[in-house]
Image 1: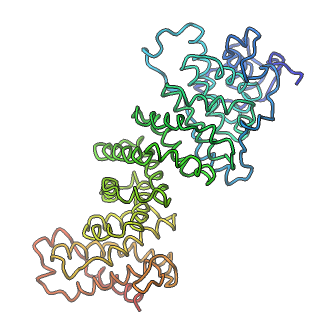
Image 2 (image 1 turned 180 degrees about the vertical axis):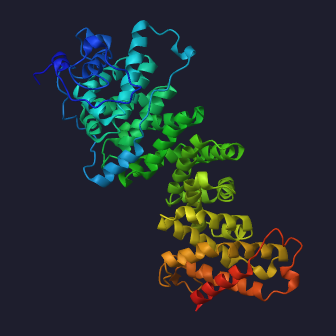
Image 3 (image 1 turned 180 degrees about the horizontal axis):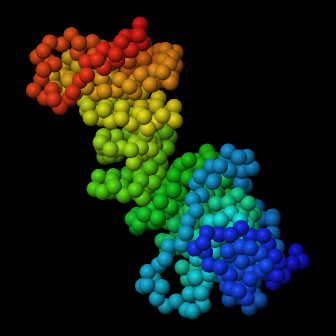
Amino acid sequence: MSNSFAEEHEEEQEFQSPPAHHPSAPPHESFDISTTVDPSYVISLIRKLLPSNVKDGEHATGSGLIGEEPKTESRKEDAINLPENGGEMEAIENCGELDGPEPRNDDQNQGQSAVEETWEECGCILWDLAASEDHAQFMVQKFILDVLLANLVVSQPSRITEISLGIIGNLACHEISRKQIASTNGLVGAIVEQLLLDDVPCLCEACRLMRIFLHGIKARLGIERLFMRNILVRKQWVARSTLRLPRIVKIVGFLLAVLESQKEVAAILLPRLLELDLSNLLFKLLAFEMSKLKGERIPERYTVLDMVLRAIEALSTMDEYSQEICLNKELLQLVKDLIELPDKFEVASSCVTAAVLIANILTDATDLASELSQDMNFLQGLFDVFPFASDDTEAQNAIWSIIARLLTLIQESEMSPSIFRFLVSILASKLDLIEDELLVRPLDHGEQKTADTSGTKIDARVVAMKRICNILTRWKFSDDSVKNTSSMEDYRINEEDVDKLLDHCRKVSR
């Protein structure tokens, strides 16, 4: 194109003002435009990121001419096909969390030159500014992608590489600039190359970018080359080598993106990840997060717990990998502990995912249901989780399928009086929940959710209601020696609630 980078520097552009904490432009670089961050100041920041070989008139390999308009046609092997329809684009938006620079400590900053310090300061400002869509669009128009690519393809200190990837990561969270990233010649390949570095922060920022791109890839033929075994090894190394929260979020987010990506992508990456013992890594991360949850409630860690559980749940639905999950006793105990937490509100989403995971496990490991049916605390926990799944019909069905299976296996005639009383108190206390469920979703005897003894598919709730009817009927006809146990004060039972619930269940049983 005819306009050079210097000529673009002279143009005036409409630019939306950023939050107040962003710096304002120096007076001598101010345009006649009403914004908190002057466009000319942003341009001056971008220019200060130019690597020395470009400033001296040389061209960085693969970066193209910085003074030219960004090219819109990429090499075939580096182009990423981003989706055009709203649904897939929304999925990318959901996974592209905006991020900000994380300062390194004094030891890490030792030995920096004045030029590097200036580069870091300017880069961190642009990293923050890229969180704004209008700022991001302006920065892309002013060739920031070419400048960052020039930095990625030449040898630079790791902090500069991290900031470059961080800026691109924030730019990628906006649709227009994301498409420009995908179509910039050589940029995606340069980002992938950073996955071979040993610097953890750089790897984490690269992972964040790859997570965004994975949601947008359509039947990509070159993905085998981009995600070689040694790159996947790096992913696992990051997850194992650091427990710092922001980094765990990024690496687990990438792993989850692989598991939830399109079938073409998963088919390529999953076998390699499983060869690298991905499932064991996820189990260890879950154990770590559960130990944190039991020790102290740290809201910032809830996201990691939820992502780890979602990743394990995604694996449990895949025939090739479900067996390993079903056989892991430690995993089952961890998930049970989560379901049985007395205060679930703060980790409600994780509890719902845990319930769905258990439903998937019981589909393949039916013998585990007998063991779980002996645990009344677990049954109570399942009922307590149900309200959190009010907007997820599939999760509700999964929870009912577990409840129906457990109630079917319970032998109330063989229970001690105290355990029997505990069971009845659980059921009676859920009267309101069951009434609301029957009101919102009337029972359909033909709905396929679980199988009865004849093999006919019926609604799991029908099975559960019939068993509740049998249990409560036995309770009503029990003598005082059963009802008046020594621990009766521990499990209070409202007999009116028992009668109402029994009436509902009898109607279902007819």
